[in-house]
Each structure stands twice: as structure tokens, then as C-alpha cells.
Amino acid sequence: MSIVWYFDFVSPFCWLQWPSVRRLAEEREVILRPILFGALLNAMEQRGPAEIPRKREFSYRYALWRARQAGTPLKFPPAHPFNPLPALRLCVAAGATPEAVGTLYEWIWAHGRPADSVEALAPLGTALGIDDMATALSSSEVKATLQRNFELALAEKVFGVPMLAIDGVILPLIYGHLSKRHWPARTALG
Image (cartoon, rainbow, N blue to C red; front, side, top):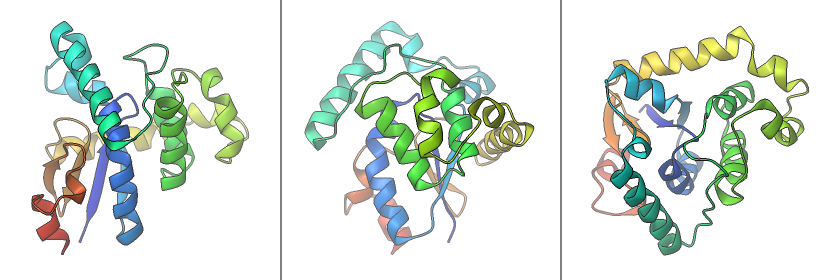
């Protein structure tokens, strides 16, 4: 069974979903596939939630409420939305492992730190085994991997983040549903 989680660090909902995905990854192999949400929206000729004033306000309030309900720390970074490309590239350069994903999410969403530049993420480089951040984040291999992830997302008909694909079937994730008995993926996962 193939399980793929599509995410972007710009989304607080991906951060809120991360603990459930991390637990799932402890039980089964889960491919963590970072994608640039903004590029996905552009491909579908849509605007993001933060670009629509009423939706932005609601989304922020809802994310904060969900975090309180779950007891998950949530502190917005200094600017939002922000350019997540440096964080996505760092994640790919570090192997898109659960440790890399978790480290980046903690930095951005638990502590509210910036993630929109190589300089902002520099303290994470050593922790993630990256000696030369500028070179790693600008490498053609890292860029090609993110492009490939984007193309795979389009091929699987991903339309937002977070999303889980089980054997190519896309399941949009609403926070907490991985742990609910009524969630349709529980049947697929056994």
C-alpha cells in the first residue's frame, strides 16, 4: 500500500495535521512529499485562503481554535503568508524525513519563527546535517525534486494541502480525522 502526504510549511493546517501523520508514519511507510501550495493554486487558477480577506480571518481563527482544542502550540510566524520555498528546499535537502519535517514545523509554527529565507533558517542547517545552506537550497537536484513533487501532485489531482493519497486515491485531511474511527482511510489502512 502506498501512502503519500502532501504538505507545505506555509499552511498552519499542515502543522496541525503533522502529529497524526507522524504517528501514522511510525506504523506504516508514509512518503512525505513537500509541495509549493502557491504553485498548485496557480496551476488551478485559484487564490489561496490568505488572499481572500474574510477567508483569511476565518482560517486564522479556526487554526488557532483547532490548536487550542488539540493542545498543540501554534504561533504564527512574523509574516503570513510567507514564501515557504526556502523551508521546502531545506526539507528536501535534508531528505524529507520525519525528523526534518518535524524540525521545520516546530521552528515555524510552534515557535513562530520566520522561514522565508536562507538566513532565517540558518540555525536549522547544522541540526539537519546541512553544512552549506545556500548551496544546498539552490542545488539543481533539490529544485528538480520539488518540481517532480509538484508534477506528481498534479497527476494525483491534489488540489490543496494537507492531503493524503492512499494507493493514488486523494483524501483531503481535516485536522484530527486520522485518529477518528469514522474516517474513511481507517478502512483502507486496516
